[in-house]
Structures are given as structure tokens and as C-alpha cells.
Image (cartoon, rainbow over all chains, first blue to last red; front, side, top):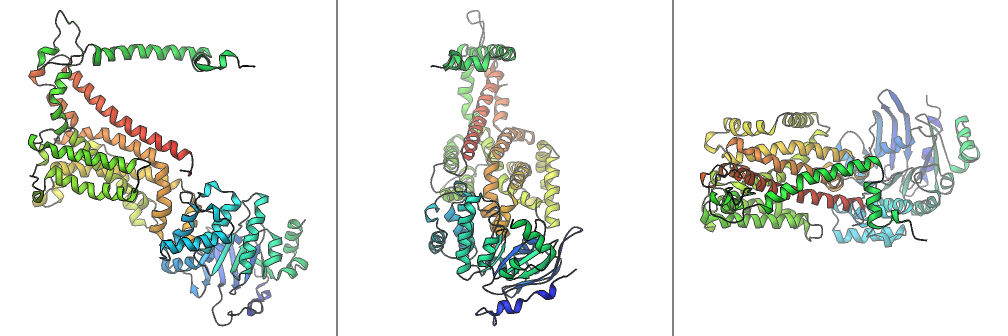
Length: 266
Length: 365
């Protein structure tokens, strides 16, 4: 049932962080279970992510990796266990959920930009309405992040006029405009044409280098090698293996992990 | 090398669209036949054989010199003010004209694509205009506008008032009901479902009867609302149930990702709905909303059953006036009503088509 619960060497990994010791961990998932009806999607998930840590989550489709990170900003409910984000326990309390969502940015597979708003309006909407930042200032922040994802010239366009890669970078900028403490990425490159994957990954690498806490569900193993502090491998709703990327790719411990890597790395 | 003659110009078009197969030829012939049946008699009656001047029925009576008599337009000309204002006091009819002008201004401002300051337009249309309308139509002593009881209102004025109130209230109420029906709170959902299904399950006439007969039983006699107001409430509630279903269809067309994108940013329920979901849902439902409004506009003729003098009713009472009693008077009155309703509905339909075409080009604006 729980093959590697004890194998998780979370504490040592997080200790390298500057403020990791004093403040609560960015995300703490304890004994979380989730069912869809009778189907047990997540089984006894335990994972602690320190501030500034970059986690890549991989695994075959249907392994529950998207569902797991969607539990972190409560887009999915869980039935057992506890998820604590930045010290705030996520229970049914709507106020707390919105509080957590404000500080947790999310990037989706299908971008989920708002098609009726311009790029700039997409970026300033939440800062203005949720953070109550004056419009002018929100636009300044938005332009700063558009610059950072290298599409400042697209501010006045509508999402439908941009390429997939550009849309995903707008989505990243939109999340950053809320100055989140944690960023969640749910297969951010899976819906993109191959030639656009690179531009999005580069943006994410830059973000990682800036010290952002990131949880990334992805099949991009190159990205995992380059930026991840730890790689989490999931299968059938369980965390099978957690390890530093060098170790994870060179010496996978479990048969299931070896099989997955042999299939994905050709 | 030029394309063959068949594929070019008007002849090519006619050939391809009207005579390219036996079925097409048959349909073309049938269409022409129908036009032949309908158009000449209509033109004859409305224009060619119509009477254009006169002061009473004798102008519109057939004689040996004029065996066929078309529409009796002098009847309409003489009664036009009655058709527009009903029994509204003659000295005060300018107030109705002001109302028409204010309404037309609001409609154009709100709906014209290029008009500026849409937010101000909405405030004007949904808040200022209703207040001004009541002040002008019903009376407002501080401005020297004397009280005109609603039982004197009539004609096109009443038809427009009933339709506008129905349309203006149906949308917000419909949105609330649609959100209620999709709510996670069981009590809210149950109320919305029962209201919508109940109202949709009964004819408008029943709703109007209930509003005018049963409503007074529920409220204290002292402020029992007047007859027109009761009908207005009935029409607004009726229209909102239909509007709710139209809006619900629009809400269902919005992908789940839009909800999740909004939630992930920490927008609460109302902001998510107001800023993200409804603007998109309403945009795609505009053609259906207009369609509903067209139906509602025509349905307003039913208010006569509770004794309100709408446009059609003013024609009904005028056509039996002995002064104008001729074989063509009724037909003329109904033709006038048909033309009026057709123009109004056609304009609404045109507007909806324009919006549809604009939306089809995406979000480029």
C-alpha cells in the first residue's frame, strides 16, 4: 500500500533553503486520499515541499498526478488527510480556499485564458479585483511580466490571436501578476505544437532560477533534469518514488519507475 | 482562358441556384407561383387600389366608378393618435413623445456597436430611464407634470411599455434564476427549478389572469397595485422564466477551464460569474435573447384579456366605429397592425443577425 513512505528524505532536501527552517513549508500533504465515487484516485499521498523548492511530478496518464496538484489549490476536493499551504490548512472553508488561491498561481494544459478580454485585461483582472491594486499600477505590473515572458508587444491583442506558446506564456504571466508564493503547472506543454514547447520551457526555467517554489506535472524529462530539486514518480494514485533528478534518472529504484523511464526516454 | 459562361455572372448564378436540376426547377416554379399569388394582391390592396384621402366612410365605399376598393388609409390617419396614445389626455401627449424619444435614445446608445461610454449607457437605460419614464408618463408634481392614471394609457404606448418592462426585467431576473438553477445550494436550486418549470408550464394568459386576479389577494388592499402594474409584473415574471433557460444554455456552453482559470486566481463566485462567465455566456446567447424578446413583444397583445388597451385593442375598438364602417375598414386596421409589428420585429431580428455576424469573426473587434 505504501511502498516508499519512509524513503522520502524531505527534511534534508528542504534544509538547504534560506528561510525554510523558520517558516512553515510551502505545501504539506499528509495522508491524503481521494475518491471519485468508488474509484480510489489518490491513495495516501504524503509530500512536503519547502519554500523555493522545484518539484517535477511525472508518471503514466491516469496516475493521479494532475489530480494531486489540483488538490493543492482545491480545484479538487479530497476526502481524507490534510493539505496545508503556506501554513493555511485547506478544509471546506471557502474563505480560506480563496485565501490560498490568491497566493498559489496555476498554469493549465489548455491555458484557460479569458477569450473576451485582451491580454492586458487578462493579466490585470485578478490584481485589480482580488488584490485591489489600482488599475494603473496593475497595468505596470502586467507589462513588467509580459516583458519577462518576452511578449510585451501582444498586450492589446485577444488570446485567440496568439499562438499556443504565446498563450501559455500569457497564462504564466497572468499567474505571476498575483505575486504568488507557489506556482503549480498542470502539464503546461502537453497541448502545444512541438516547436512551441521550447519557448514555454525557457520561461519556466527562468522562473525556476528566480527562486519560485514550483510544482510541475510534466513529461518533459529534460526540464526535470535541468531544474528539479526532486522528481516525484506516481502510479495508480500513489507516490512510488521521490528522488533528486540525477539519482532518479540514473538509478531508479522501483520496477515501475524503470519501466516508465525506459518507455519515455527511448 | 475565361471560365465557361455557365459559371459566370448573373446568368451563371441563376443557372446554378435555380435551374441546375429538376428539383431546383420545380422549386423555382413553385416559388414564383407563390410570389404571383401573394405580391400583386397585396400591392393592389395596400397601395394601388387604396384610398388615400377622405373624412369618413363614404371615401372608402365601392361604387360603379370604383368597383374595387383597397385599404382605407384615411381611417388610420384620423385615428393614428388614438392608436399611439390611447385615451392619454391630448394636452399631455407631448410627455409620451418625450418618453418615446428617451427610450429610443437609450436603445440606440446601449445597442449600437460603436457608441461610446457603454457603462454610462447601461446606467441610463436600467436606472435613469425607468425613473424618468414613470415621472413623465405617470406624473411628477414638482415638475408640474400632472397625474395621468394608467387606465388612460393605451395603444402603442402601452405595447411599448409592457414589452420594454418585460425585456428589461427579464434579463436580470433570468440571469439570477439561471444561476440559481445551477447553484450548489439545494434550496436555491429547488426554488429556481420550481419557478421556471411552473411558469413555463402555464400559458401567458393564465399568468396574466393570476397577476390581475390573484395578486390583489396577497397584498394589503391599501396598496393593491394598479391594473397595468399587475400585468407588467406578470409579463416580467413570465419572460424571466424563459430568459432563464436561454441564459442557462449559454452558461452550459462555457468550458470548465474558464471556471477553473477564474477560481485559480482567487476570484470568488460572484466575481467569477460577473467578470468571466456571464460576459461570455450572454454574448453567445444574444441571438436567442433577441428571439425571446421578439416573441415577448408579440405576446404583449395578450394584455387585452385583463382589460388593458394595448395597440391591437385600440384597432379593435376603432374598426367598429360607424363613422368608418366599410367592408375594408377591419382589414385596413389589421394590415396597419401587421406592418407595425413586422417592422419592430424585423428590426430586432436584423440587430440579432448583425451581432451574430460580428461574433462569428471571433474576438478581433
